[in-house]
Amino acid sequence: MNDKVRNALETAGIEYQVHKHAGLGMPISNPLEFARAIGYRPERITKTLLVRGTNEKAFGVVVASTGARLDMRKIARLLGCKRVQLANLDELTLVLNYPPKAVSPFGARGLPVFIDNSLLQYPTIVVGGGEIGVEIETSPEFFVRATGAVAASVLADSA
Image 1: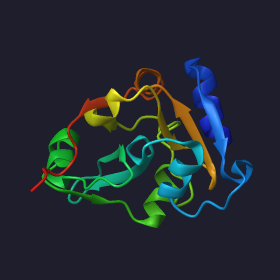
Image 2: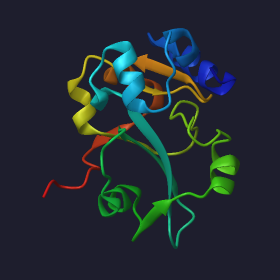
Image 3: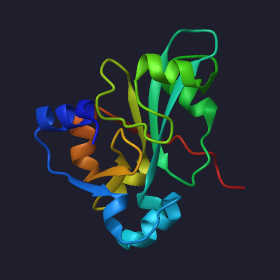
C-alpha cells in the first residue's frame, strides 16, 4: 500500500483490511475479477476519480461503485462549480500523486471527498490503496471518518 494511504489510515485509527491482487491465487485484470476472487458483489468494489471544475480551479474526489455511471451535474453542484470533468493525468499526479488505476481517496488532504450514498448500505467497501494491485477494505462509516467524505447522490439516474 502507498505510504500516504498507510499514514492516512493510521492517523484516522480505523479498522481496515488490505487485499493484494497477487495473493489471491488467480490473475486479476479488472474489478469484476477482483470481486469474484474475494467473493463480493461488484457494487462493493469502488472507483475513485479526481474531478475538477472546468472554469474553476476546484478539485474533488468522487468514490462510487466501479460500474456506476456518474452524473457530472450532480458532482458540479456538490463542488460548487458550473461544470466538472475528470482531471487529466498531469493534474492527477500534481494534486494526488497516485498512479492511474490506483487512485485512493485516503490521503487526499484538503480536497472534498464525495461518496455515493448507495455505498453506505454495505457492511464494507473496497477502495484503491494507492498502488496498482492493492485495495483497502473498510466499513463505509470508517471510510467517512477517515476521509471526511460527504455522502451524496452522484450517480446518473436510471433510464
